Image (cartoon, rainbow, N blue to C red; front, side, top):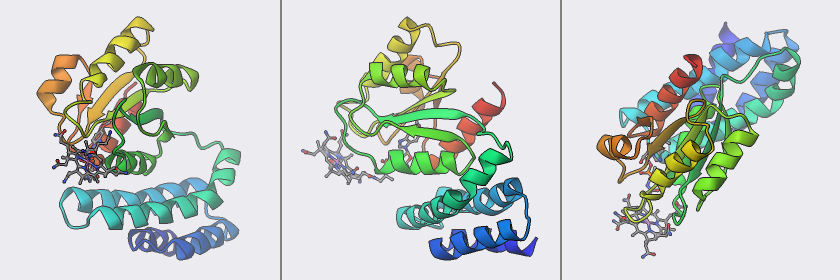
Length: 212
Ligand code: B1M
């Protein structure tokens, strides 16, 4: 459908006002909200995600595209709720205690939102107990922890231990990432998933939510 394809294209170009205008137009013309979401907004964000993974676009382009997606979502969200389109899953995300770096975490959040996952952003310097409390409060499928410092990544083990103590380990997958984090660290602390970048984090998150 031409209009929906245009939404995807303008989103990839980061043109927020145009995306907003076309989403409103598509709704007026009777295009289903779910189609606008999946074939317009999410499709555009997927293209950006793949290009980011392949180093064809960089952080600024991703941030601008995400802003365009949010502009479109603002118009679409009330109609999505009315038409019964549900989130594909729920994630809580934050940068771990002691760590104030949030650029990577924000990219992961945007890519996950771009897959239709509801993401509750806990911000930076998040204590293990807060990750777990917020996951319980929001009935989350995923806890997502980001760390950029070798001195803070150890706190991720405490998230795993706190989740175990709260008896939610069978309900919630724990994902970890950030520059110093590796697959062997993830295995060592007993987390469920390590991904090296925002796009693969979003793919893994969607797979967890779909297969739950
Ligand atoms: Co800081 N800093 N910094 N810093 N900083 C680094 C990380 C550092 C490598 C610089 C260096 O020394 N070369 C170094 C860490 C050394 C180490 O521990 N090995 C460092 C340091 C030491 C510090 C301070 C201690 C400096 C000081 O005060 N002496 C201090 C710490 C403050 C604190 O957190 N308590 C500090 C402060 C800062 C600023 C505030 C100035 C600023 C942060 C601003 C902000 O985030 N709002 C800052 C910045 C910008 C950096 C660098 C330059 C860039 C980080 C970044 O945003 N990268 C960084 C050096 C570098 O990387 N070149 C550095 C871009 C971002 C898109 O990448 O976050 O890796 P990244 O995210 C990627 C992946 O890692 C992955 O996806 C993202 C995109 O694909 N990913 C996940 C991230 N989270 C994920 C979660 C997932 C999955 C994937 O699943 C849940």
